[in-house]
Length: 118
Image 1 (tube, rainbow, N blue to C red):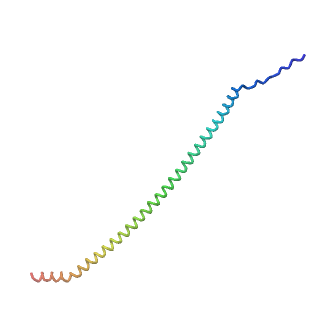
Image 2 (image 1 turned 120 degrees about the vertical axis):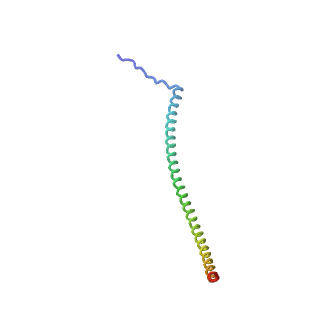
Image 3 (image 1 turned 45 degrees about the vertical axis):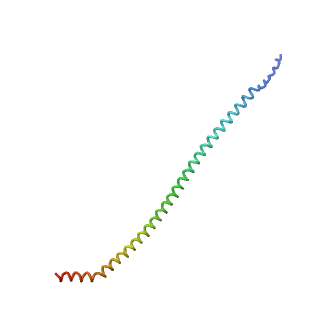
């Protein structure tokens, strides 16, 4: 005897089940998107830290070069001022020597006169 065939009927999904399935897929997509955003954020932070480091090095280099230029300029100006002061000192010394030489004979005569008059 043959058994009667039972038909398996597929129960159609209800609209609520469809919505829940869609929401579940949407949640998965959001989780994937959040993970991707976090990865991008980490890479951006690493990149910005690297760029900040490069800019610090560049700024330090520029500041060092500027400081070196300022020191060199000040040294040059000081050297020029020292040379000018030495030249003025030499002129003054020469003038004093001339005055001494010009009044030397007169001083000797005065001393001799004083010695002889006593």
